[in-house]
Amino acid sequence: MAKENGAQRFMRATGKLRAVFGPANRSSLVHDMTEENRKLLAQREAETQQWETVTRPDGSTYVVPRNPDDKSLR
Image (cartoon, rainbow, N blue to C red; front, side, top):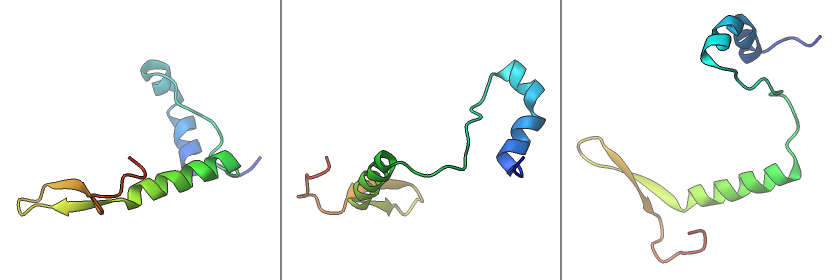
């Protein structure tokens, strides 16, 4: 059996708690990305590049478009 990672050890250790609070996903965390997932990741990364975070003097933040004229991903 392969060595368990931290998430797997946590899931095994909290088994009785999950019986009360509900199940959690126990799918494998170690797998190759599919071509579909690679395309989706590239799309999400491109979407995040069109925005920038602005911080106000009071510390709050908000997101604004880097180029307001670019409507390609909206």
